[in-house]
Length: 338
Image (spheres, helix red, strand yellow):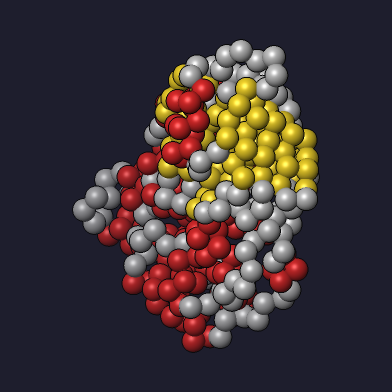
């Protein structure tokens, strides 16, 4: 994600200005009050700020067009992940200091003093998460209430396998936002992508709860797994995620996942996918209203990648969806998770 032409989010323009005070006020409305000054030798800003908010994340492209000093102090109520599209920035948070580049993002801790010097030609993609949202995500992963604020390692190495995976998820989200159609219009797909970004950030970027997350979680008991299955069977079209299931059952995400792995042999989302495939098979094989188009039925049940849907359907039923629609169902059904 180093090509600024592909990650500007131009469809979500917030402000274009050369006025320092106007830029400071506009950026503060999205993030927090902060000091903004031109560095020595700079005479004029050419600020571009594009921004869009989803359910749990706010995604931004910000370029000051000049070398600037940005001093938020403590972010307090938000977390941000800042990815340099190009150029370099000096970033300091608490006792930590890094040089941010396209291969090194920054994840400042909201409760520690934070300031930056951006070089000219150093635009950034910035993902903002409200602090309660990320704290709740961590509580769901651990199954326990937080006793201290989350404190991240400031530097996020995007050249590691974990870093590349995280930036790959963000690149997918940005690409869909820039398209403006497809997955971004599907609430279920967006919810899964947001949860994946939050969960992978907590699992891969070191912080003061990382050791706790690495500890082995006990599996959810069969009664809890059965309750999760009942929820999925009763509401298969609902935009359910593992996080939402765990929250509704008052267990940790990894505890629920381990329970499914031990007692069902697959993840909660794999089980839900299987339920939806079976419902689609019922619709196609009985010629129910709305079964005129395999594509329409698949999208209606939350399958947005049609190639993967067709492969999963064939693996489960031994035939293509179109064959079922034409009345050629074999009746074959693999067990959940296979």
